[in-house]
Length: 340
Image 1 (tube, rainbow, N blue to C red):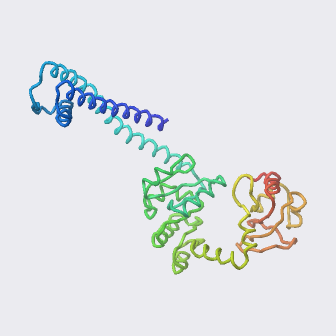
Image 2 (image 1 turned 45 degrees about the horizontal axis):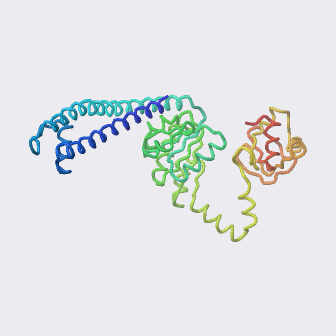
């Protein structure tokens, strides 16, 4: 509703500007050919006539020039008046529309619970947002650059414009109700401050922080970050691995964990499996026969990981299993256990 109205006012501005340019051209041509003025004098006479500033003529006007000037003045009063009213209306309405749009966005954010907050919409923030969109996760982006927020804000990506270091901005993003915070700011100091602030406001929040320097890793962990990611180190390790074990890395790169039709890896909470039937061990689950998927990992309730777990591994509440399969097998898995 708001966007079409803004476009409507913009179209009125284009019309007003076109009328002003047309009036200017008519005035210059008229004084040039009716009064015989040189081009510069014709332009000067047109400007002082349209703006009604009251300067004297370059030279006395003959009767034909006076008649032309009368009609030019009458036309300019109407067109200039219209242009001023349209431009004023557009400026005022644009401010109002931006306020309305921001209020609507804030109402949407206020209704979110257990959502994700991304601080910073740079390279890492954009990648995080893209993956969350692929998984249809609800999230909010905090970005202090208003131009960036206006350029990328859509119905799918709500933005809060402001500095993520400020508690009020975090609260506007719903930090008290959020489940995860991803801080991907370019400065480690800023990320550290965000982690401290977020942990103070929400003790149960899961915090993932970006770090540029390895020396910042322990500081961010002490500040309250659950996970600290060093993109440069990950990139370097990946490139080196392509030299050492290229086929293995290429195989891993071809595995997809996001998307609608090409997912190869999925994780399931044990509680999701109990909704279907009572299980005690991975063997009782019998995923290989039912869905074709293979259990390749297990996460205990305490957060410990087991690679290629034994079939007798007990499925305790709070634990998770990680499965591998072809896209159609993953789809069958999700369908079998009603996983969204």
